[in-house]
Image (tube, rainbow, N blue to C red; front, side, top):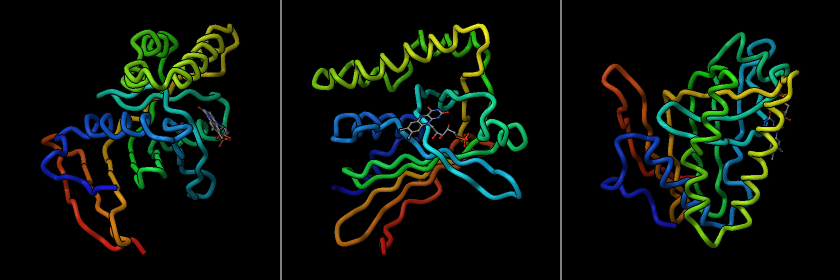
Length: 197
Ligand SMILES: Cc1cc2nc3c(=O)[nH]c(=O)nc-3n(C[C@H](O)[C@H](O)[C@H](O)COP(=O)(O)O)c2cc1C
């Protein structure tokens, strides 16, 4: 797998994420939208679990969860959290840290209707018809769950302040590109070659 071409890095990390995500969709990854979601739990210890990202755009990354779950209890106390995507076949990982907020049902439906960037990739890629169906079925399931009167299943948005794009390279090297959100918007902090192990 080739390393990160610094000339081609987008200034906005969401655009960079979109490129990598679309490439992950075209790869052999079974669940490219699965991410380890880490929150700060009891005693200040971080804890992770897998969630599925349903959409992303400049507002952040959308996922759904039971509002009574531990992870949501955690973010009520500390809204800082992170996602880790791992695309093994491409030797890539993406870390995203940010602040999580709960969406209203109306906002959640709006995201479904708008169909976030990730679904756009699925539909554009005609060779991935099964994946299209998989995602749409998932979305339908989420909409049905949301429409129940006693809903506990809610939409949550992580607004990012930090990204690391990590690419494994030849001979146990890796390269990364780090984006940090500051006063003047997104800043690309570094992009280095390092030894993997
Ligand atoms: C492939 C996969 C996808 C999952 N997707 C979600 C999801 O989108 N939302 C969710 O709340 N839990 C999802 N889960 C379950 C979580 O990993 C976790 O077990 C559950 O949400 C309870 O976590 P908590 O007790 O830490 O809150 C998924 C699990 C797997 C293995």
